[in-house]
Amino acid sequence: MPEHRPAAATTSEEPLTILVYSDDVRTREQVVLALGRRPHPDLPEVRYVEVATEPVVREQVAAGGVALAILDGEAVPAGGMGIAKQLKDEVYGCPPVLVLTGRPQDAWLATWSRAEAAVPHPVDPVLLAETVVSLLRADSVVSAR
Image 1: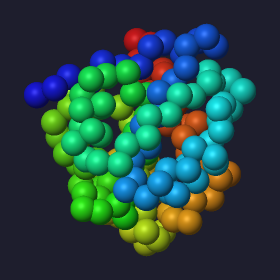
Image 2: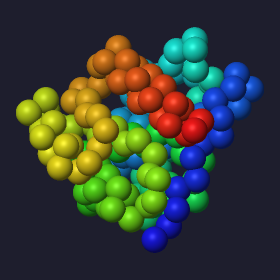
Image 3: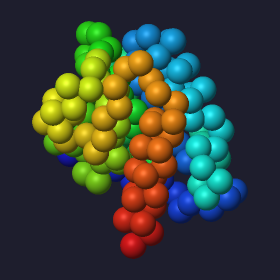
Image 4: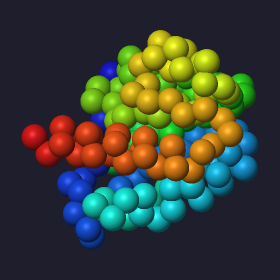
């Protein structure tokens, strides 16, 4: 079972790595533009790893250093919810996962996938940023122990 190595301590000099998975380049762009380089003044800058295929998601997360994975639940052929469940089952100490759902009513599926949060399409920049900030803050407390 691959082991997740937590992202480096959150200092102002070290960027946090956010993995953004979708088969649709526009969805990845929406996420990156919504969050910007620094989603909150209390957090370090963010570095994005944009991924379009499921094997690369697994490889990147298993390698460690990913602070948060944002997975498109509507991606094909591998949807973000299935990938989230697989990551949570197979990667020890998996980073927090946020799933982009097709609609608000799909939040229960994100719960099944063991994702820590869900945000519906279309991406609401304010909701996405608030959710990401809360996940990154919660994970930095756990990682610092």
